[in-house]
Length: 520
Ligand code: HEM
Image (cartoon, rainbow, N blue to C red):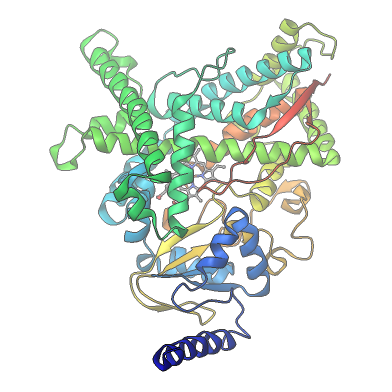
C-alpha cells in the first residue's frame, strides 16, 4: 500500500477515535466528525419524541450537532421563559424554519416574523376576542359534535368498528371551515365522503417535517423525486381546495353586499382578511388569503382532533377516569336541567336510534360557553392529556444572535433552539415522581381547576406568540367530549397498536380503532 494512503488512513482513524474519545462524558447523543448526531437522529426518527425524553431526563438541555447546524433542545421552564418571552426578539421562527415550511404554510401567521406576523396576529386577535365569534362557534361546535355522536350511536347499534381519529379530523375540519371561513364542506356527512384535501394535507405535513432531518431534501426537490415529488402533488390538491374556499367566500360576500342581506354578512376570520384587502397598503392577494386559510386549518383542525383522540385513548384505558367523568356529566345534566326548568327525557341503552339521538341533543342544548366552565374534571382530563400528548410536541425557533441561556448553555446565531412540550410533560424535575402517569387530579385543588405556569405547561406555547385559539379549542373539545363521554363507553379494538406519527402535529400513526356502546 502506498505510504501516503496509509498515513491518510491512520490520520482519519485517529481523528475519529479522538473525536469519539472526547465525547465520553457528553450528556446528549454522541456525534461523528462532519455528520454530527445526524445518523443517530435519523435512526430514531420514528420515535424521536421518546428519544428526546431519554436525553432530556438526564439533562434539562440537550445539544444535537447536525451537518450544517446545531439543534438545542430545552425542557427547563427558566430556559423556556427566556426563549419565548424574555429574549423573544432573538428567537424568531427564522429563515431555516421558514424555508422548510413555506411550501405548505406560505407566509401565514405560523410561518412569519416581524411586521408580517404582527399584522396577522392583530387581525386574528381582534377576531378571537369577539363575542359574536364565540357565540357562533358554540352553535357550530354543538351541531358538529351532535353529528359525530349520531355516527357513534349508529355504530353502537350495528356493533361496528370506527376510526375515531379520522372522524374527529372530519369534525374539526368542518368546524374550522365554518367558523373560520364561513363555508360548509360537509366531510362529516353520514356517508363520510372521500376527503382528498385531508389526505393531501397529512401527506404534505409529514414530508415537510422530514425536511428537518433530511439533508438531501433540496436535491430531491430540485430533481422532483421521492418524497418531494409527492409533496408537489399534495400541494396542488391542497391549493385547489383552498382557492375554492376563498372564491366561494368572496362571491358570497359580494352577493351579500349587493343584495338586501347586507346585514347578514358574517364576520369570520377569512372575511376579515378579505376586507383588509381593500386597502392596497395591506398587500393582500389571493396567495396571502390561501396562506391564512391553510394556517388556520393546521391550527384548528389537527391540534384539536389529535388532542381529542389522545383524550379518548386515555379515558378508555383509565376506567376510573371514565367513571368520574360520567358522574360529573350526569350531575351537570341534572343541575342545568333544573336551572333551565327542562324536563329530561328518559335515557337507556335499549332506546331506538332516533330517540337516543334526540336525548343527546337535549343534553347538548344545556351546554353553553358559561355552563361548560363548571366542568372542572373534564377540563382537567383535557389538560392532563395535553401535558402527556401535546398536539405540538416540539417547537423550534431560530437564533438571531449568539446568546447564553439561563442554565449557562451557549447558543450560536444561525442554529435552532427547540422547546419540547412532549418531553417537558414527562420530566420528574417538572412534575414530580408521578410525571409519567395520567392523573387529571393533579390539576384540581378543592375540586377547582388550577392552572400551571405556561412556561412549564407549554402545550399552547407561551409569551407573545401564545396560541390564539386556546379558549376556542377548549370550548370545542369540552363540547365534543362531554357529549361522547356522557352517552358512550369506548373500547380499543383488540390488536390495534396506538403510536404517534412523526409530523408537526402529534397525530396517531394508525388512527384510533374503537368500538362504542351506549350509556343510560
Ligand atoms: C388543542 C388545541 C391546540 C393546541 C395544543 C395549540 C397549540 C398551539 C401552539 C403550540 C402554538 C405555537 C405554534 C408555533 O410556534 O408555531 C399555537 C399557535 C397558534 N394557534 Fe393554537 N393550538 C390549539 C388550537 C388552536 C385553534 C383551535 C386555533 C384557531 C382556530 C389556534 C390558533 C392558533 C394561532 C393563530 C397560532 C399562531 C400564534 C402566533 O404565531 O402568533 N390554535 N397553538
